[in-house]
Length: 212
Image (tube, rainbow, N blue to C red; front, side, top):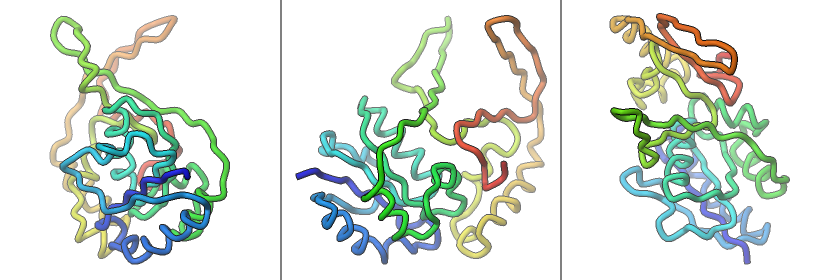
């Protein structure tokens, strides 16, 4: 029997996912999966002891998806991944065409087909240009740096639960106090560009905070 690892963040999206977790589990059992499920413990790798599952289903926001992808790559795994949008913005799930209804999204995964997508990697370079592959950062939606790029980290869960995506705007206004430029070099096959930039965004998805 195929096995699914169902991971959910009980803090995402006003905590609505936890009440639907049993219904989601039953949906995958009816689709022929045995299921291992539970809330994500962000202090440990959720793939410890689950390296051979057939499918990973993540219910949470973009931050939760990012965490799971990086822990997967940390163990050099390449597993099928399904995403249930249960967070505040759910940018990457939206890019994949997932329903905003949690149960309908779970059904899409259980009954859908496999599609291949890109996964970006940011290599960590030390002194002497030595690479540190154990510290590489992976992303499926967006990699960003500069102004506003730590906004999501500074946005309180309490505020997101109260006013939704507007909470990011409140946190962004606070981040304006730390405004400064960053020297950026971009090298292509043909030439090199130098910029003083306030923000850099590398998109693999389509939006950031539902803003294209």
